[in-house]
Amino acid sequence: MATDTLTRSTIEGDASRPNVYRNFIDGEWVESASGETFENRNPADTRDVVGIFQKSVKADVDAAVDAAKRAFVKWRLVPAPRRAEIIYLAAEMLAERKEEFARDMTREMGKVLKETRGDVQEAVDTAYYMAGEGRRLFGPTTPSELPNKFAMAVRTPVGVCGMITPWNFPMAIPSWKLLPALVCGNTCVIKPAQDTPLSTYNLVRVLTDAGVPKGVVNIVSGFGPQAGAPMLEHPDVRAISFTGSSTVGRTIGTAAAKSFKHCSLELGGKNPMIVLNDANLELALEGALWGAFGTTGQRCTATSRIIVEKGVYHHFVDRLVERARKLRVGNGLDETTDMGPAVNERQLKTDLDYIEIGRSEGARLMCGGHRLDKGDLHHGYFLEPTVFSDVDPKMRIAQEEIFGPVVSVIPCENFEDAIVIANNIEYGLSSAIYTRDVNKAFAAMRDLYAGITYINAPTIGAEVHLPFGGVKATGNGHREGGIGAIDFYSEWKSVYVDYSDRLQRAQIDRPE
Image 1 (spheres, helix red, strand yellow):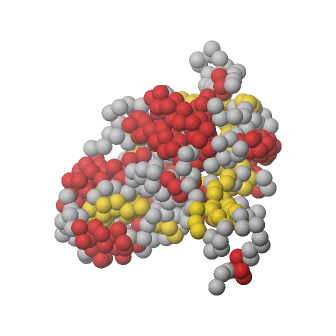
Image 2: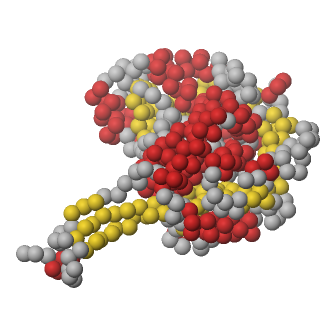
């Protein structure tokens, strides 16, 4: 396989110019039918062009889907354990290339190296897990209600799966989609986020190096209207998996419904962390800092609301502000950096706009709130870690997803009041509570209306073998990760084997 043509095709040997990355369709690295490209720039230093990518259009998507459709005929017949062996080999390769891929990711996305190493590791973990599923893919066998009859249910692949992925976890989330789809016997067309295509290219390159046949995985880069929409409308795409905003997800869900496509939507969050009077405050502070400012707050699971019982409220706010001011903001390639940039200028503007909204609503800006653009930060999209206190739960900064390093601290009267505040939101992805009271911990597990609940840990940090997703406007009921992903990328087929050698008409001919 000519994997070296992925990045070096037209500019090999010229270190002063960025690499050109082509689409991967039917096992070949090809230019877009549009003949147009776009730049992928480092958000910590926009002078650094990470790569040049194809601006794909409908013709590219059509070619990729056609390749996937043809490849599906053979790939679905490869025994699942053999498909899994390829994924296992990919896991080994990802582990070997972890540092290289982490540095690529920090350059294109901005988050610090310790986080991008974790992002790659999540892809490794997902690959190992899904490789194991290749020898399971269990279905039930069950007694028949009639004599001399056998009954069971088996999983079958869906077909061609289209995938549209976000920029904040540019290798982990594509791995959540591609790997379960492949082990189930599907073929794939993936469009990575235009801000972070390189990490998905690195993942696809590993899969091809591991032995995934041509046409089974195809990648088209570009923008939503030109490269994403044609995937939604294509009649041969039988499933769509999307991770992104609730606004876009609603559009995708509507479009997919018109042709009865399977559709998995993992959308926004406005995640609460409750801190009760009896909490280990030092632990809660560590969790708040990591949950609110990890990945520059650019996670759907970010801790964006901290609901604190009044007995410890002022002490907690003071300590949180003190700690937030000490966070070092800068280029994520510097190992001493705590928080990187916003992913692009548009996201930085959104963050700043919400800070102004918070001020106008009457919340107290305790720290942060300003762009950082002095010295080495001048060419990046940096923002101070920002803490608002005395936030009313109905304020926009407490209700709307910001997706930046802006956290709202909300006072509450007691445990019951905290649960009401936590649930009074349109989203329901992740939630957390800090308490030493086991009774309240278990009550929170029951009463917090979210897809994920943490006890004495922040709202971020999901593990790949458990379902990931949420309720209400956070999604449409499907789950990424674990067996939930297998459920989405497979169809159930019920099988009946009648060895009675006579017609038996189910409920009609039941023995009395």
